Amino acid sequence: MAGDAVEPTSDRAAQIVFSTDRDIDLYELEELCDAVGWSRRPLRKVRKAIQHSFLVVSMWEQRGTKRRLVGFSRATSDHAFNATIWDVVVHPDYQSQGLGKALMKHMIKKLRSEDISNITLFADPHVVDFYRRLGFMSDPEGIKGMFWYPD
Amino acid sequence: MAGDAVEPTSDRAAQIVFSTDRDIDLYELEELCDAVGWSRRPLRKVRKAIQHSFLVVSMWEQRGTKRRLVGFSRATSDHAFNATIWDVVVHPDYQSQGLGKALMKHMIKKLRSEDISNITLFADPHVVDFYRRLGFMSDPEGIKGMFWYPD
Image (cartoon, rainbow over all chains, first blue to last red; front, top):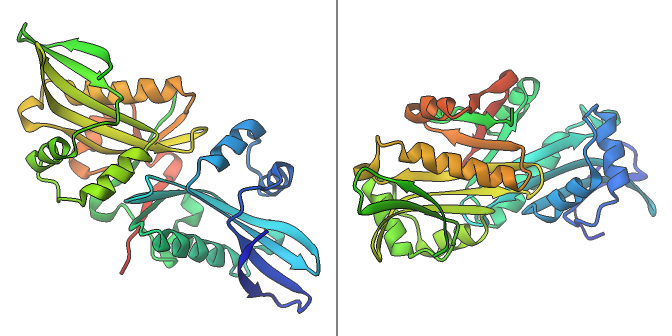
């Protein structure tokens, strides 16, 4: 795993490490998503989605040679103008420590380094303020996020 | 051009044809976007965005062997769960004839045929009702579309 950023934590033996490696253990990712109560999704579709995302960032707690997946996020993109961030998750044991913020800042930095200027997402009501504090605006100039679902 | 759907128009000599071919004349596309008053974008970025879109649908008026680009849309996607529709444009001369609706229905049909169930977009205020009539919902369950722009 090529860790490309490190955040010290309060425990001196543990470090938070970010990675853009897509070769993630899907069972470990499923466990993380289970921990926050997400509905299970077919692993073959999760694998395909990761393969075809423009950016995948995972967040790990590393203690010596051991590591644990504690956060994840990915973005789709046209590689030119826009990116849309999906599946932002931080393990409940690691929430309220600024790690969600660090994960999102890492996503934004990576997308900006690829010259993507329009970064979008769809936020559940309880995280709108979290994203607002990171500089995201809801409905700028009256633009509405809209969804189409099959009947 | 492999036209994959045809809509008859009132003029018996003209047909509306849809295509998913990405090999679009970028100057012709720029002319279409100019006609609706969009800001110009670097063609090399437009080319890259088209290459990396999951789906590109162009709409043509065909008269005999002559054709004119009258509409365009594209979608980014993770190829598994979600797609986001961008750059929906219909030439002003061809608006108010149901062609925008036909273009969007074509997009949705194509995305559904690829098993994409979560189709999203960001709608300017004046087209929110247009998308609503097509079955799109704004802010379902309080989900907010959010944007991050560089300073």
